[in-house]
Amino acid sequence: MKYMLLMQFSGQSDVPPIHTWPAEDVTAHIQFMRETDRKLVEDGLFVDAQGLTGPDQARIVRSGDGGPVITDGPFPETKEFLIGWWIIECESPERATEVAAYISAAPGPGGKPLNMPIEVRQVMEAPPEEL
Image (tube, rainbow, N blue to C red; front, side):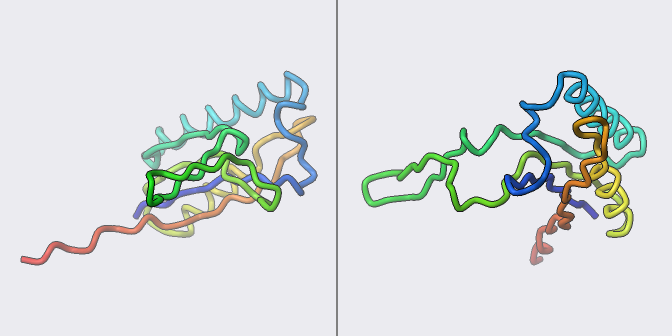
């Protein structure tokens, strides 16, 4: 089974934005993420992982009568935003939860674990083809 582990950030958390951290803390955090990816590859769980730019660079696109309607972000009502994800393949939701808990403890300012929320969602499989 495949699972998507969604790393989210909330402007209402007590964690300051990463661009305000001391350089050594940013380096430690990025090293943790790289090591996590390496470990997932070694354990045969890694499928994909990506980080995202901030919501200030997001665009919302909807179809419209005269073509696409594009709205810039961020939006003041946004309480949380997605900052990255992993897709892993493992045998159970419990294993996916273990991996998410490990990622949640990524180091933040001063090396303190962030304990950030990681949403775990099973990736839907395509329905079987009819014969």
